[in-house]
Image 1 (cartoon, one colour):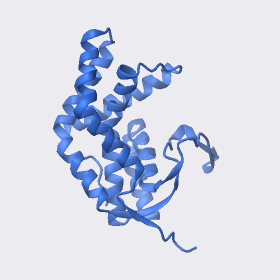
Image 2 (tube, rainbow, N blue to C red):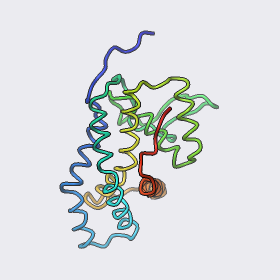
Image 3 (spheres, rainbow, N blue to C red):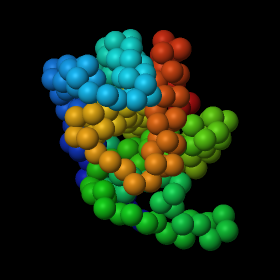
Image 4 (cartoon, rainbow, N blue to C red):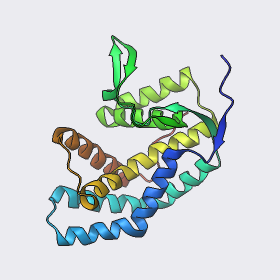
Length: 208
């Protein structure tokens, strides 16, 4: 089968969305969250997350901006992707993938976003699985250099900015979520990611 001919440069919607999220947070939303945390009664968990989030951003802001810039200069194929791939959205028949559910976020974008999202979930569930999954994927379908740059940007920005998104939802938008058990899982993963980022001086991803 002939490889897709389309390539795009700097057009990855997922990374654009995250870059805009970071920009809004640093220039407006973080200050608004501080104001609301002072005025309203929020749980210690939310206040702790805000402190972790700000500390991680201060430490890794330059790295994040550099990754966004490098991804704009890189080229990879533009294909239909799920954009919300995670273990709970994948249907298995034995050990084989039989289908997917919840396609509401699907659009044309970089496949590196889906790969980073899926492996990101595995890192929290079992860090050893994550390293194995990266190695196996790269053996079956080796990534090109530009794809690795885009993958790193998706992965690193997810770990650094997912807490920002949740703080915006809960504090600024006052969203309520019916499935509190699922929210708690997300919360634990976000805190774990931020604490990991505060302990390491460099991004945790490197595909060899």
